[in-house]
Length: 269
Image (cartoon, rainbow, N blue to C red; front, side, top):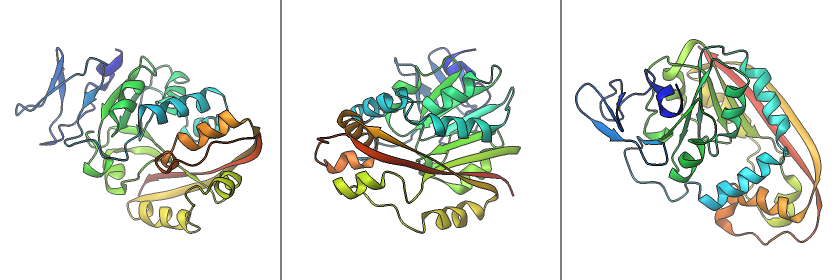
């Protein structure tokens, strides 16, 4: 199976929670709710309009250039190590964006299938092309994940919104949730020089409190690197995330930049 077909037996109707199955160019639940497949190969199960802060095509272009450069290769390796084999299982990424991290995990696990969820239709279009064994779906994590109970072996959440109740619901009994958040050192130089959005000092504590209410925290590790970046890459780093909505000034010179993230692993409580 390839494309959306890999999601057979995995998706749930956003209206009634019943299982969705593909019938030609549409997906149906047992009570008759129907959802058409977009011509770009994704399925829209968001159940509402796209929010104003959804990633734009320009943001995703910038993110793709940064990811393709290998700058965040250390994050890919950390996720791969933490995910385990996941042979024959389902890997779900919430807020998948381009689908880059998900595609890497699926590619290295020949019998795994991937499900990319994002509230942005532009992101869904990209994720639909990220890997043959990835199904791309538009969904809003705060409206509930259109995924059946206990269907996911590995759940990725990389710089994305976190819904503890839904993560716990869709996670298989032996599954794990991998959450990547920026540490206080992440892009510190750019935040200082370009007036970017800050990182709360208690961000990690709040993460543990929020997800820890429904999932058991297994491990937390910090991964970082330092790189000297040219102005175009600095512009892309700023433009690929929420800072893009605040129009900071363009970079004028190369700069030495710290990239630092925390990776937390959660399992069923």
